[in-house]
Length: 127
Image (cartoon, rainbow, N blue to C red):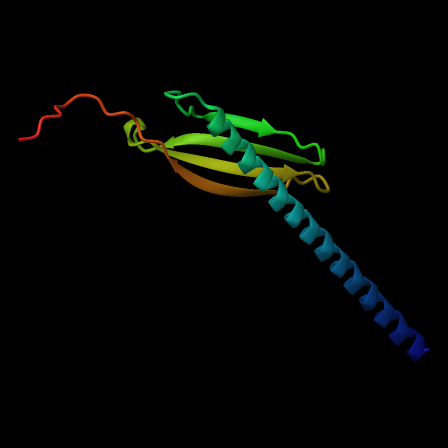
């Protein structure tokens, strides 16, 4: 009888440990997928910057990105001005979110972008 009890406890611990291991593998897969999709979001943002015409300003705001590879993941980027408008410093937050068991975990990267504004006024004389 004692042997059956020890065997039962041992199997319970073994099954619980195996379940935890599988959970870690799933978390790792989600993290790697999120990093992949974050790279795609950053690439999409850089393509948008390249498509901007000369003299066009980078406006504050948020845009979303959809992925052909997976409908579970959603990408966003948000541009905000840091400091004064004349300083030309923009904060860009790239985020990828997914749905998992009623919770919405996400990964994000924060970048800063210097966009100098054209200075007007003053004199150009030197003596």
